[in-house]
Image 1 (cartoon, helix red, strand yellow):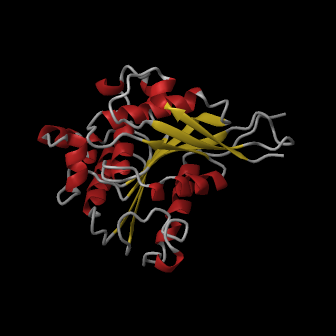
Image 2: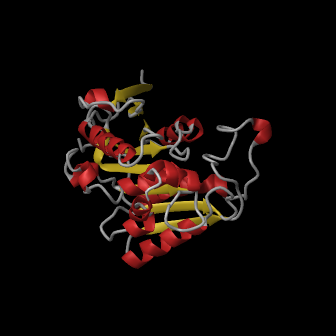
Amino acid sequence: MHGMRTVTLDLYRAYALPRPAGAAGVLRAWVTETPAKVSAARRRPAVLILPGGAYRWTSPREAEPVALRFAAAGYVPFVLDYSCAPHAFPVALREAAFAMRAIRERAADCEVDPQMVAALGFSAGGHLCGTLGTLYDAPEVADIGPAALLRPDALALCYPVTLGHAPTHDESIENITGGDPALKKRLSLEALVRPDMPPVFLWHTRDDGAVPSCGTLVLGQALCEAGVDFALHIYRHGRHGLSTADAMVYPACDVPDVSWDVPGWLDAALRFFADCGFAITDARP
């Protein structure tokens, strides 16, 4: 018999950290147990999922439903419930960095290949994902571990808040920066782009009314100029916060109207990760 088990890890307890009042920092995994007749040395790619929510909350729509889609594709998905307002930078980034450390340190127990760990974020979680993929050696996370332990191997930013390009999402900016204009400038994703960052999969909808797609276009240009491996998809039509854009996350009678290609974003992301070398591996007999 084989199936799936869930694993929950309180990062503050696991690493004996003082918990800020009201902080979250809980990591949850869905681990598919390998059948007995398959190699006991099987290793799977992993993905750290960072839901959106304007740095005010973390959206369930962008959590477990996305995790289950990745699990069905052979990944071990992890969802981080990270701390939001009134906790500003760098609390969420530190939790995401600890999550990367936890995934790699517990790789054998979860059948994860520690060199195939992606991070994927939605909206404000997309911004958090972008900072994780560029600030893995920043002073704010230096005590958590070496950069190689904290750096994701690939990124996927889904309708991300980029901060720097106007118009953008004011509530997310206020919540993550506490209103500090210097911090807003520092945390603008296009300003954080660096040549040695992980490959990036980006997608947005052209008519997103909450987080305009122009920020993603500017980010794509910055990635291009820096020589970073990336793919950029701007879909024609769809509102903000789509997640899987289907009845998995919306009432069947109220699935949002989207252009035909939007539901394919997840398969496109999986193919991008595969092109980056993500795959299930087994030890040779």
